[in-house]
Image 1: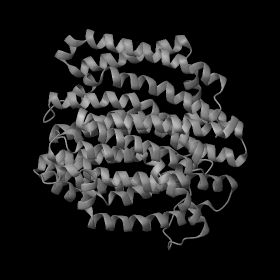
Image 2: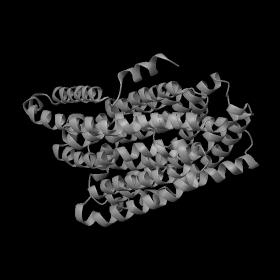
Image 3: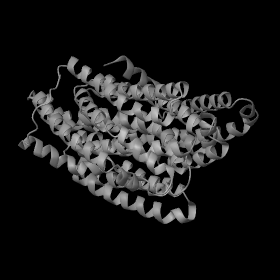
Image 4: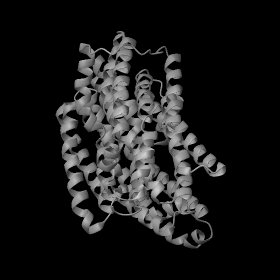
Length: 511
């Protein structure tokens, strides 16, 4: 993939991911308005978190990180990539069926492991009930992740990036239908989860079939190729899902503070917007591209792609982090403060948003650095780094909780994110010139930082100047603040040459 097409791939995935995240906000706004931060809301968050957490391990965090480089190299070399993908799909499907059966049987233990603070109140039984309905989602979404990997490895990004849009549409529809028909909203919502998984799998299966990869389930066999895949996937399971493991620890701590799981959930959703749009787009596009370049011996091209990915990530992420830290309360109150979600809930959520915002650059840079290891089929180093980061997270979350309450979980997640990023950066230095920073990135980093600082000042002043407007219309005031701040950032960036608009126009024009 040419460097300019690499950026185009980032934009394709980023635009679809942005659409999904915006619809995700609509989903969360409806969710908060109907259920607030009450028992039903917290039970659903825990139940839905279980298949998502295991998905990070079995699909996106582990299986695909091992599968995509090997599949990409087979495509590049003209080998039988389809047969390899079918074997991998059969092995994954078998593991997922077994996991789903075991999870259904032991759901009370899983809920206790996720949120032991629920024990003894109505949230526990609700979470167990909801968990058994929602967990089969992992089967459909994990197979969808494999088909997405096939599409991404062949340079087709749109369908895989668009699939999450279906999840948000179906869940919003489930809540609205439940409310209008008199069905318990939490139950209508949780039944929408496996239905959304089926829809997502159908979309990417069709797209893969159109691309010549209409994969069929085979009898699973542990061939030498599959053994190698499993060996590579095992350590990547922890490394790729470290954020999920840290969030698990955070939810366990938060479960002892009423309403806090919902506060952290909504805060997580807000910082996941830039994380998804930028970091996931880069990770999805960069990993197969680096794998192909390494197979072809193109170290210079790999270095250029890595540097442009880092530059693109920093340019879009740092201002988002500044906004989350400087104006979290206007963001949360405008988005969620209505219906059952009170001003006190909004203030508690805003504090978590600010803390997560401090860690956003680290979370994004992890997504840029991890493909450097996975493209070389090195899953062990990220595994070791993840262990250290998990230790940092657990010590801080548990140790600080008696003193600062639920916010300890956010502090721990952010600190662990920075620890992981530093370890990945240090480990990547051993890869030599292929991942060295080029002159263009070195020149632009400090300019991006200065432009982001200017944005922070503009947002702080704008928030105070717009208080009378906030009192009349929060959406109008927030729109003025965000649009004005964005204009300030782009103007400063252009004046400082932190980023050239011609870079973006060229990426959209050429392919």
